[in-house]
Amino acid sequence: MQESAPLDVQRIREDFPILEREFDGTQVVYLDNAATTQTPNQVIDAIADYYRTTNANVHRGIHHLSQEASMAYEEAHDNVARFVGASGEREEMVFTKNTTEAENLVAYAWGLNELEEGDEVVLTEMEHHASLVTWQQIAERVGAEVRYVRVTENGTLDMDHARELIGKDTRMVSVVHVSNALGTINPVEELADMAHENDSLIFVDGAQAVPNRPVDVEAIDADFYAFSGHKMAGPTGIGCLYGKKAILEEMEPFLYGGEMIRKVTFEDATWNDLPWKFEAGTPVIAQGIALDRAIEYLEEIGMERIRSHEEWLTEYALERFEEFDDIELYGPHDPAERGGLVGFNLEDVHAHDLASIMNDHAVAIRAGDHCTQPLHDKLGTAASARASFYLYNTREEIDRLVDAIDDARQLFA
Figure 1 (cartoon, rainbow, N blue to C red):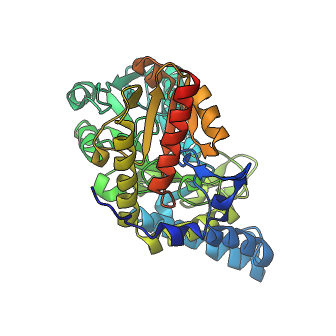
Figure 2 (figure 1 turned 45 degrees about the vertical axis):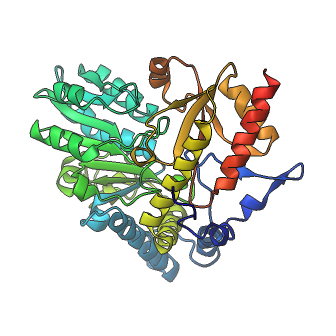
């Protein structure tokens, strides 16, 4: 095991003053990064600078402030697209308010118009509700069927089962890149090949992947790929939807109103160019500009180094947890097969009680079903605890977590 951290964590932590917060004299340990990461000063400054110096609506004014805001907002689309390997730049990058809205955009704008009775949508048993519930409801409306690729006992996808399910009737495959409950890294390139061999499209939920590893949507050959700013050191309120230009051009808008139109008469309307036809009304201007700064921040550190750091932390967490026979771990035990999170339960202690005790020790983790209720039903538990790591976390913080778990163990003995 590598002993030294791949990143200069102490230097990085200086950019995140919230990590210095104390509760009852104890410094906080923030291990809820799969839900929301913390935001560095550089991104906070970008938001403040926008409102102090540039605040204006985009694409609607001739004055200098509007032009400056428009230019920064458009460049943000280009930079976000480049960050995930989209050569079509802004025309292939739609800003939404989160990954969930991106999923709904595709489901409503493409699914309602393209799916018919007898068609199939293939998901996995580890899907987030943002995917599962959305496609479930769309399929019910049009008479399509939703089918689920099984999850094996070790928390990976049953790829033989995937090959059985993805067939001539499949129109859409929607899969999470990295599971937010199991940590599993799914073989999305292989699933994309299966989908395309059967003339199906593939939607990849990258909310837990883009923040912590290099992603190339064109290498994956994803038709759609979505992620959220607040999980990658950016602000809340912004999500991103990559879509292949040819597909986006054929799709109808999801929302109607200002900005997304080209011409309106009392009888009809025509739509604006990409990506604006999918960004109705005043868009997420400050958030988009701040996300651009977050990406710059992450790239300055290096996405490969961030991935290495999370693997380093995950490997250590798994080793510490495996010291105890009363902790049940979920997902692959090989840190190279999972993202930077560990789902677990402590024997005879409900996950919510465990999280409450962690909070007494100023250790912030998540407990619940993590928006994966069907997966938890399959796991045979109503809830699980989840510790998730990011570029500013340390092994010492994992030790704090383990010590707090030990206190919970003694309390419920």
